[in-house]
Length: 99
Image (cartoon, rainbow, N blue to C red; front, side):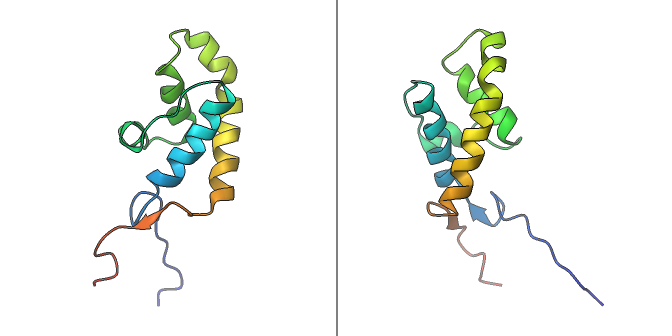
């Protein structure tokens, strides 16, 4: 008997790049940086907030020590903003409910 079924919604069944872009750009604004597009972010995401934040900051900063000094704050901003958005800009991928 199956008691539980778990789904990885984030990026698997649901396209969350819209919410991730808003959350990431909230962080970028905090650090005085210009926003990135969904297309740019879609090519960066996939390894969790800490990696994404560092890669997004590296678009503007070459100094790895500086990136490390602000990365934890950036992760916190992205995480809090993403939770607040609560899927406002996310969409279920086509055909998910077809089967």
